[in-house]
Length: 217
Ligand code: 5GP
Image (cartoon, rainbow, N blue to C red; front, top):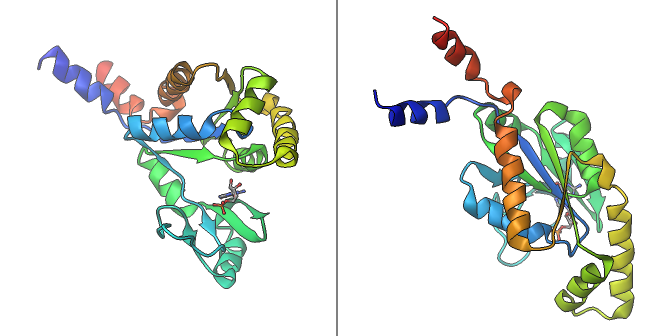
């Protein structure tokens, strides 16, 4: 066997997947970084939430959300079917357990674009699989500039968003990693390094036991 073959088989060692959480105040670049990560990496996909909100135009069942009625959502809550769920703008939203649990076992990773409260709930349910990453803007002025250029909102709405952003920033110390998004490409590179390193954690590399056993034979 060539050394290249050896490297290939090592790269394919079984591993447990992880739940990769990206949080940030709105305007700090989380959505862009999430999109870049999903495009660049085949082993991670976005966790699809369940919601009681009706689909908007262009939204597809199973891609944007799993759309359910109130009775179905109630049933899932009773069956302990959610990692976390919340009321948002008059509807309910939740992260379903079933599919994620099965896929983690098969070594697939999930990306969560959620706020600090969702992060806390997810972490309480499953500490070993969760990796928490927080993205900060380089300065508060830059955050304001990004919100202003993005939004068509008037001043009051921008102020409300700035207030929400400050509240979100105050939870920075509940995360495993904090990355400052000064430049989108270098921020993305750092987030990717975190993902790569976390995949190599000994506890996640379930294939190591048979591999090392073979080495020591
Ligand atoms: P939208 O209805 O615009 O798609 O989402 C409204 C809000 O619900 C967003 O702030 C989004 O972050 C939040 N949301 C979406 N999915 C979930 C979820 O699974 N859990 C929680 N806690 N919030 C969610």
